[in-house]
Amino acid sequence: MDENWIAWAAGIFEGEGSIYQVGREQSNGKYNTQIVLQVKMTDQDVVHKFQEVLDRRGNIYFENRTKPRYKDQWTWRCARRAQCVEIITLFWPYLGKRRKSKAIELGVDPLTIGGQ
Image (tube, rainbow, N blue to C red; front, side, top):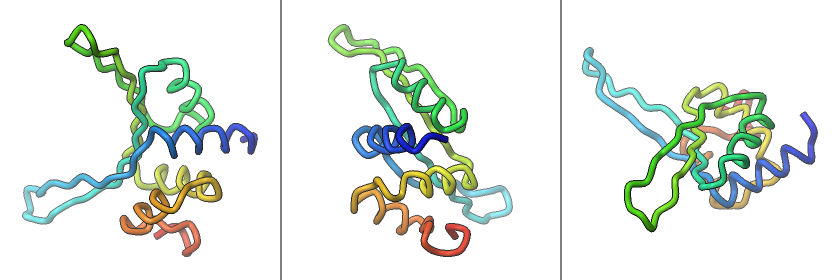
């Protein structure tokens, strides 16, 4: 991967992205959580380029806005932990304090062995 494109994608993520955790109770009573990386924007071409730079990791979803004054949106989302760790590791040098803190809070710190 070209470092300039990684820096570009990290900038998109820093400006338009989010890191969060979702969870749900399993049938066995255990609570399962997963990390999600997401970018939402109205520029379809940018979202597709973002995914391309990341070697097609994650998925893109279209959201049709029903109110006339709203624009349609495209959402890139990655919820596979291994891929999230890889992406955060790629972006790490370019992320600001807030995104880094959130990643560490959710247990993804590229400075530790394996991002665990």
